[in-house]
Image 1 (cartoon, one colour):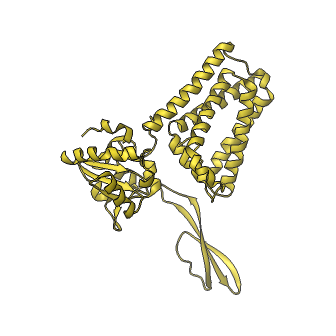
Image 2 (cartoon, rainbow, N blue to C red):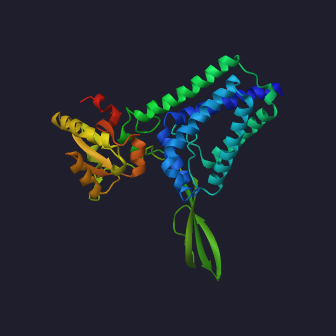
Image 3 (cartoon, one colour):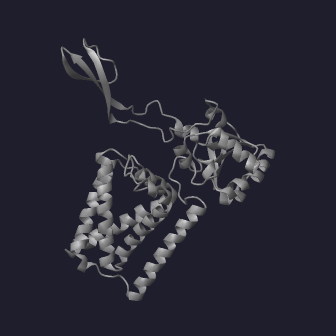
Length: 364
């Protein structure tokens, strides 16, 4: 039993630390995932949506410190009970999500590793088994340090996690796992190679034939059937290759200017998914920077999901002399974890990406 407990202790502790740290690196991104769970379509808890960021930080900090507590042997009963309650809740949540097809990606490993809903549920079941081993063999969890050493290590890990969360919120994630990371070319990440695997989809056609409904399955072609068409549904057997970026546009008046903008030699892109919710201090800081960028030959554009009326109001209020273009809100949230955020591009390649707090670091 001692051997099983020690193995489980290491596996659970390391996994909780890795999973928690990835989300701690991007708590804003995890808060977007929580908002998805809190929505009416999933858990129907919309009153929690305004608190998603606070909950996100608390959950991921707790996840990391529990992993550390387990490895160092700090307060075993508290740690194992906390792990057990947490994994029971998340196992239920991931089963609900997978069975009812509510959320396509749980966000367990942020943008670093995408898991299907059933893969996520399977991972949680495996963790539940390991934590139950710890629960029944809790007496074999021995501390690595003396009481003072454990207290110091526990306090230091908690403070370090909070400090790191604050840092990435005030700047940007230290590690960027998204397809809009510095050095990435947006055009390349939107391109599907000619030899990429195609989606494998079954089309289930419902016809009335001789007074009875029958289902005829094809790969897309309309079946040659002597009967009355009723309905058709699709079944994705294999999604095939999907470009890392597939929802990016630069639209204005119904026209997409992405190809033209991404061919610019010097482009400054101001991203604010919702102008009404953007930081006022950040919007105020844009005027001087964008004026300097324009003088040095940069083309400056704004990217938002807000409507024309809000765009004009913000431009007037903050004295901004550049045009805003439309892009999907989810895509803009993915591009940069700051509102506003600043990107410098050269022919579609991201050269620099900044939180508005770091606007002075923009290299023009």
